[in-house]
Length: 384
Ligand SMILES: Cc1cc2nc3c(=O)[nH]c(=O)nc-3n(C[C@H](O)[C@H](O)[C@H](O)COP(=O)(O)OP(=O)(O)OC[C@H]3O[C@@H](n4cnc5c(N)ncnc54)[C@H](O)[C@@H]3O)c2cc1C
Image (cartoon, rainbow, N blue to C red; front, side):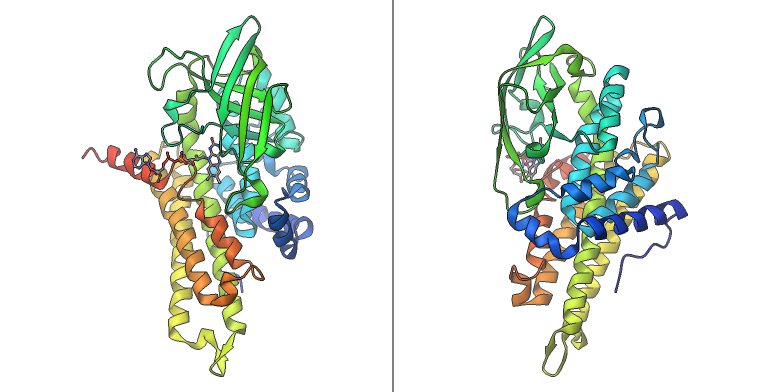
């Protein structure tokens, strides 16, 4: 039984949901996900099929081949991807939103015309390279640097935990172009060819999200043409801030969708599991756990949609976005943990998908600005 209803969605959003589920059922059969996870293989077929159906461009400007859809439509898309499989949601989100929105917001018209159509068609995948071994939460402390040399920048440094870099064609790299400038200053964003000489991408083994796994990247004297500077030199901080609301909305929506899948999966198992002569769903202790999971799912979904509504009304909902990021990612972890308990030994076994759901959910409170950092943002806005 499906718990994720479509009440309140527009007809377009219902079509987005139906069409995405249809594509994913054909190109990423649910039974095949375990194998991809085991082998740490990116879901290329599903990604390409989504691109072919136009979903990569849903939120992109119409003048570059996108559909110019609203944040609410984007939420309908992303929560459906997260519901079906977080790996495909992460794959979409990394290229189109996490990295791609830097080009949408700040790329020159020439760069947009050059790169956005290829993202939309699925030809080009991106990764966003920001975190470094020495600095994660403290983004302003990055050390990777680019020095201007005629028509090029020469890029040197080391990035870590970079999602999808192993399948990316281009990397959006945040670096220092003026190491003497103070914090938050002298930072720039470069579009770097992932196959350029001097770029070395090494896969890392992570607990979850294994099909879009994280990577370490080494840049050694990489020549980057000046026309690949995204925005103005030194203005990367402004760009990072501008991208955050939509980025965190997507992280929230992925988690919300995932909560519904987890709840359905646990409920289906529990209906069939007989103990003491009856399905375990007949025990109130199990019923309450499943009800709690649905509460987490629904609350998460509501907080994500609140952010989408505010963005669509032209607001800058920094507080609500941080709240939604915390509510949804924490709900996702708790939902998976409860689902695992509902399934007993089967929940803990890789014969079933619950343990993968649990592993995939666990990154939520860490990535995209940890939930501690989100609380810092909220507290700052409370003017305490
Ligand atoms: C699976 C995965 C995928 C990722 N993908 C990407 C990617 O594609 N691109 C990219 O650039 N990065 C990526 N990251 C990195 C991610 O953004 C960082 O892990 C995250 O920002 C936290 O940084 P850190 O790991 O260095 O932890 P640290 O910053 O070292 O923090 C450690 C702990 O201290 C807490 N902490 C730190 N500072 C404060 C503070 N001021 N107040 C309160 N608590 C604090 C943190 O919340 C955390 O709990 C990914 C990470 C993971 C795990």
